[in-house]
Image (cartoon, rainbow, N blue to C red):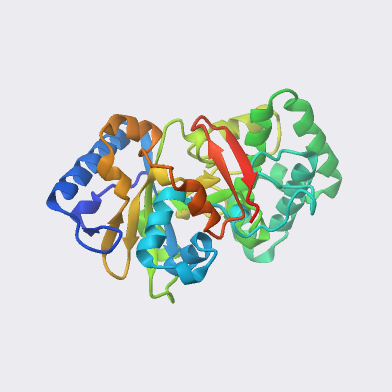
Length: 342
């Protein structure tokens, strides 16, 4: 199976518009094309990937507006390009550490979390409609291990013993198994997930992950720089995750997960605004450009560390959104989560 996907410049196929839906100026078009061409060149060097996420205007509105009466389409895009598109845990998951002991934060690698992961993997493996997928992606060792409930405590103990004083390894193990559950869908993990689904293919994102019944479908266009394991949890691309599980002699799965044809790239925490190029408005065949690109001068720095996004209005935007929590990253694979008190 190949995971190489051809990249066609956005400006060659879509009308470029601003937050208000108006055509951008010729000067802005020229700047955007130059930026996009630089990213494509870095992509050809193997130093970044392009990712795509199907969305609907309706779902984004729920995430980005606490008070739906404040909604306008330009304001939605403005907010999206400040705070990004975060995982369900930050929007749907109302449980906190006082309500349960597992997956309470982006850095939770507790024994309770690994116990939950074991149980959910067992649930996936016993889901009848996933059986053909399980047979193609899961080895007999993986099946036998997680289908035997007596291995639950052994799993937790092995993780703890082999990652003692190595917090990052323990987090990577959590995310390795969380990817399997995330890709499996509702049988695995839903509202608790810290991962955001994207694909390497714009076509797959549009065909499979936009709401066909929605009048306003979107595809978010983004990019992720190397080293990928700082931002994504996709063992078939960021092999660090699979390697650590193998080194600890824990059961491993086929790195593409249960749906290899979807070319799933799970982004950790959020598709950050600094990695968003813009949003394709499917019905209008237009592309809303991230306005922060126009003030980006150093394309090389942006391709490595993201588009410089003015964060002056970040807290106000988060507080006005539907998110219950948010987090910061140093872009080196470290994250710090905060709860929102309103």
